[in-house]
Length: 209
Length: 209
DNA sequence: CCTCAAACTGAACAATCCTTCATATCATCT
DNA sequence: AGATGATATGAAGGATTGTTCAGTTTGAGG
Image (tube, rainbow over all chains, first blue to last red; front, side, top):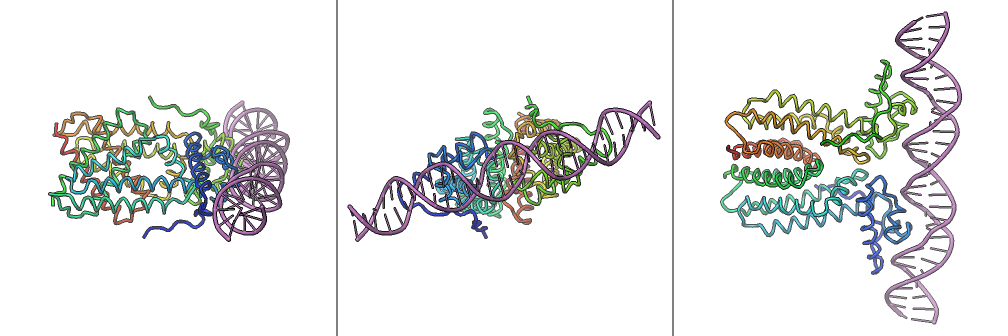
């Protein structure tokens, strides 16, 4: 079903004392900062350690190698994002289907544009690693959450719930990403967002069941 | 308007003899093959040269550095893609708006899935370089082409042609990309494609003018 | 056939940077 | 306080690889 986490990417050990947790947080934070500042190619383990206020050796006690570090950062990010989406989906249960779609768009778009630099940096950081497991797990969680949500829509019984739900998710997520890549202006972004909402609404209305 | 090509990424010299052109082609081909086979991180200049059947030095006569090589490969790819889209847009002029959208989806999806490995490899190769100029030029060309196309749609006068056109393009391109990342099965892909067409149709129908 | 510039060669250079490990410090429990 | 395992240090190793350049080959034009 979901691809398992590549064993080579697992973290080396779990922190057992308070300071170790602080260290880990510092490392994560430093990694993101440097990813944002200079991008993946410029990211060196020494720099990360320095900015985190620890030594390189410390880093290597938690991460077997650089890739594992990037992997962990993305894992964290996607986990939080998935939780936000699941939360939204739970809240929106029972609303009209169009409102559900709008809520989904709102949550996702807000999450991605809150810190655009971080979003962009993470989008770009994924190259070096085998991120398939990450993506698939994220997709599985969001699919499940949205399908469950749309199942509760009143006045609508979708002929193929799975299919409609997956289409909406893919279109919404994809549109946001593409908008990012094209560096739209704020004006264009907010306009695009409105059009996307209109599009989802029209689509849902056309799915009479 | 469009960001200019970073000067550091320009190619070093233009070929003036026939064999030089052959060399360039071989280098491009080798680059793509290795990108597909092992991904960007494993791509070394020596390997590219070897597979292209030339020496490293030759490569460096045309490309000032590795990034410029990747840049050139992507530039070529996007140029061809843009031409395909412009062609489709020209052909579809005068058709009903929904058919236009469908033609656009068809062209883009086909182009991207014809050689999925290449598509994926190029998507991933962009990390190291400043690809903004590339993306913006591509976006400008496709926006112009699609806007011109939709302007010729009968029975429809869109209240905001620019806006609708850009929305459609962003949604379509984004959806395809997202579908790629999620490694959908063939079944799911063709289903998704159908849903996307339905969505665009519904959206267009709702844009009465 | 001769000349010259274009094209090509590939060993060597230079620089980067990931990773290790022997050692030191810290926190917790008895 | 002492013992023990968890945590932290950072200089040094080692391997990779992008890039250069002095010299050779090729091809086109006169």
